[in-house]
View (cartoon, rainbow, N blue to C red):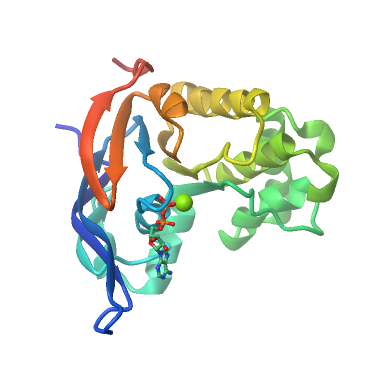
Length: 237
Ligand SMILES: Nc1ncnc2c1ncn2[C@@H]1O[C@H](COP(=O)(O)OP(=O)(O)O)[C@@H](O)[C@H]1O
Ligand SMILES: [Mg+2]
C-alpha cells in the first residue's frame, strides 16, 4: 500500500489554552492525502480551513493529535527541523499572494532557494524556468505593484515550486481574483498535478472550484463531515 503523504489523526486546535476564554477550533481532524492526489478542503468562512492549513503546512502545531508528513512524525520535531522539512516538501500559495514588495518577480521566486542555500546562478536559472512555466518570463524584472492580481498569483505559484516540493498547499488561491483569472490559476494547478505529479491540497470556500478536484472534503465548524469524489480524474488512475 502506498504511504500517505499527509497522515493526520485526531488533530485538535485550541486557542487561549487553559484560559477562561479557551476556544477549540478544530475538533479532531483525521486526514489522509496520498501522493499525486488533488484534494479540495471546502468550508465556509470561519470553519477552520486556514487553521488546518497552517497545521498541514507545519506553520503551526496542533494542541492534540498526530501528524506524519511523508512518513515523518512532524510533531516530534523541534521548530528548526520542522522548518527545514517545510521548506523542502511544501510550497504555499495564499489568497493575497504574499509577494515581497520591492523585489522583482524573479527575486521573489528565488527566495525559497536562497533559504535552501542554492548558489546564485542556479537560483536565477531555476527562477527563470519557473517563470516560463507559469507564463511570466517577460515580467521577471517587474515588481509586484506592476503586476495584475492574476500575474502576482502566477509568480507566487512559481515561488511555491522553487524547491520542487512534493506538496502544494493553496489557501483560497483565487479568492482575490476575477473568474477568468481564477480559471488560469486553476488550470495551472491541474497542469502541475498531472504533469509533475504534485500533490495538491486546495482550500476554498467555493463548491465550484472544489468540484474540479479528485476528492472533496467538507469542513464544518472544525470537523470534516464528509468526503466525496470530484470531477477531476486522477492522472494515474
Ligand atoms: N490566532 C487565533 N487566535 C484566536 N482565534 C483564532 C486564531 N486564528 C483563527 N481563529 C479563529 O478560528 C476560527 C477559524 O478561523 P480560520 O481557520 O481562519 O477559518 P477559515 O479559514 O475557514 O475562514 C475563527 O473563528 C477565527 O476567529
Ligand atoms: Mg481562511
